[in-house]
Amino acid sequence: MTALLSVRGLTRSYYGVQALRGVDFDVAAGTITALIGPNGAGKTTAFQCISGVVPPDGGQVVFGGMDITGWRADRVTGAGLTRTFQIARGISRLSVLDNLMLYAADQPGERLATALLGGGRAAEEAARVRAVEVARRLNLLHVANNPAAALSGGQKKLLEIGRALMASPRMILLDEPIAGVNPSLAEEIAEHLRGLRDDGITFLVIEHHMDLIARLCDPVIVMAEGRRLTEGSFSQIAANPEVQEAYMGSRTWA
Image 1 (cartoon, rainbow, N blue to C red):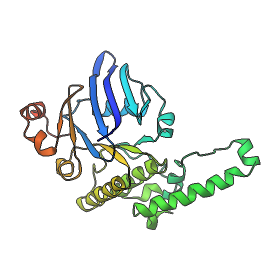
Image 2: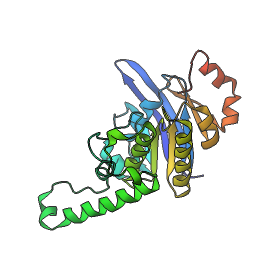
Image 3: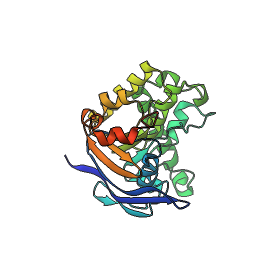
Image 4: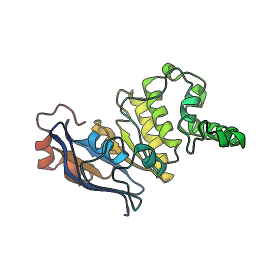
């Protein structure tokens, strides 16, 4: 399968501590790939560097054939790669619909030329149409006018995914999409991800619920101590002695 995302030799240190020590992995187009490892393995730092939140110290990130190493987050998003966060980042006082509209692709903002030409109003209406479409897709339409603060934990996770979808991405980095979510809604989120994958969106998922990883993700990439340890199907990595040793003393797979 063709690699949509390729990470080579990625390094990053914080205050002299190496969080990434030369990470290498590929994510094939059309997959839901898991990125797992014990606490402190470097998974979130890898997400930060790939998505442009922080620059890597070294290495290379290639997305869709483009070298995006060190790009700012907004430019990475514009290229079709976006991410969610473990803690939902919605603006609590705004409605679900308004939260989605804030992340529409090609947002014109308050530019004078756009306003004079009437493009601002047209873009706002296009964003609203897209937001309604995304809300309907994620079963959030019935709470579209509710403030984000009123949503359940699982609905906030769906809103976070919806915000990523507003940018019309080719790939989404998902950071613990079912953390703190009840089992029934967690399964609903999994079904949404399968459907979005079938519609052509690729996912790289950090998640510590191994039952979800086993049912949803293939392949599974394992990190430990800032490096890629191994990769394979869930059954292969679960039976791998190196993986078992890496997790010894860790209470959760996170």
